[in-house]
Image (cartoon, rainbow, N blue to C red; front, top):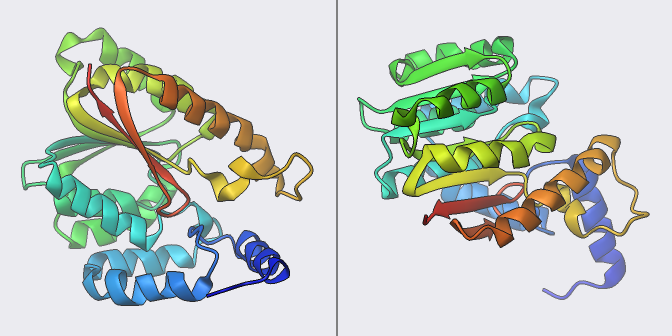
Length: 247
């Protein structure tokens, strides 16, 4: 469908204002994806948690439904069993992961806010997957440093998902590359950061978007140059970069 420049600017502005997780320039097309592919297959527990989270004042922090579906399928494809998640919020992506893992699968989940996690915990418990989750409240970096000291943790994880403080993504990567197995995956969320990665310097961005943009740009540049990984940046949600460790 042809769209003139003024209409494109209007649509882009609406997306930025609405702030939902899709970078598609058409709200109708994104809705089509949700209604046709995502919602009909979304587990009831994930729907319940998504709707619960939508009422929270910080609901923009949640993983989008299409990204949740993608993560769930990806984990099944790679037969993941041991995973880690940094940045949990109310646990939508965590639940997508837990549902994908075998019954003896394990997730180390870390977040600085237990209260948000406990909002979603009753839904996770009702889904019968809470036993797969070890939740730790507090900053992740000290935990990662402690884990690296023990060689049995090196190469232990099949998949690691990071959706946390963007100013520490580089610091996470320096540590996580030791903990994910060769052939395993690390997923960094928000790597297109509201589309701001291509915004001109004088673009009218929200303060938090502008503040973290340089950190996201730094990460994207570092991942592209890291010979230890293969990467694929996907325009799912707010952008997710998958890194497969090759050495």
